[in-house]
Every structure is written in structure tokens, then in C-alpha cells.
Image 1 (spheres, one colour):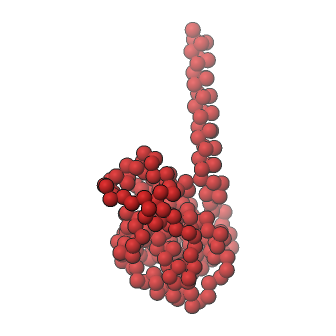
Image 2 (cartoon, rainbow, N blue to C red):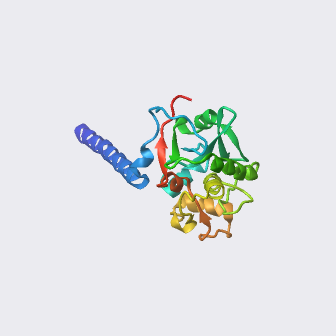
Image 3 (cartoon, one colour):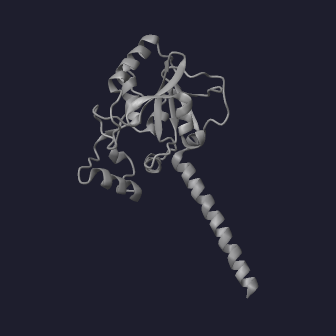
Length: 224
């Protein structure tokens, strides 16, 4: 009997190991291999105005955003310098500047990804982008992810600063209906925040869509 029990236990453990492996492979295929490539090694690049940085937020909504967009990168912002110091201009509560090193440390395990336009931005475009961004400073965070300038969410701020300041659309806006909004955790959050006022046709830009933009290339920062 003891031998039979041991065999059953071993089979159960092996089954769990195989299941865990299958779930990991499924997650890898959903998120895409590129989303698992993050910056553990340092490069030689220095932060430049207009760079877009991504990390996995530690906020309560981050796991749901991660599930909905199939990407680990749930928050993003734009790098701008004030004097000689690099900051991230981001839509949190409220829209504000955060020192780049503090922003990186705030992400999950300090892991981040930095991307830059393949074609360099002229100084005049950077100046216009800063001016556009200044209009949104202090705006409240948009928990409803609506395409309105009254409130801002992270990827909306990045997209609009590039579009309105440099005339560059980093990606095509999507609709809520393009995401798996029927997944139970996503559905629950929608009900909590919108009640019966949810519009699946609402335009939206996700951090993943910007991260995947063909206009961008990945850069590796040296030690900050």
C-alpha cells in the first residue's frame, strides 16, 4: 500500500510540474517573446529627451492591465531633462515629473525597458512636445481610460504628446472591444468602475501598442 501511495504522490507531483510548464509556455506565446526581453544588462546609451520608458507597475490594476493587453509592460512615460537631470513625465495621480531613477525603482523588481525613435527628433519637436505636455501637468489620472483631455492615463499622455507635439502617431488607437474584456477579472473591474456606462467602442491606446511600435527601437542605458 505504501508503494502505491508513493507512486500516486510522485505522479501527482509530476503532473503539477508538467501543468506549470504548459502554463508558462502558454503565457510566453500570449505575451510574445519580446515582452520577456528586459534590461538586465546595461548598455552605453544615455537617457535622451523623447525616450519612452516602460515598466511593470505595482499598482492594484496592473495585473488586470497585464492580462487584458497580454504584455508585462503596464505603465509608461516620456523622458525629459530638467537642467542636467533626467525625469519621466508620466500620468499617475496627478500628471507630473518623476526623477528617472526613482521611476525605475518604483517598477516591479526595478525592471524597465527604454525605447527611442529610429529617426532622431529635432530640438524644435522636443520643445513643442514639452509645451504640449505642460498643458496636461496636474491633470488627474483617468481611471476610466477615456479619450478625453480632461484626465489622462499613462499611454494616452505619451501618445498625445508625440502626436500633438511632433506630429507622430506612434501606433493606431484601438477600441476596448479589441481586448479580452470578457475575461472575469477584466469584466469585474469594468463593472466596478463603469457600472452600466461602459462603451466598448471607446478609443484607447495601450502601453503594449506603443511598446510594439515599428517607429521605435530599444536602447540600453548605462548606469544612471
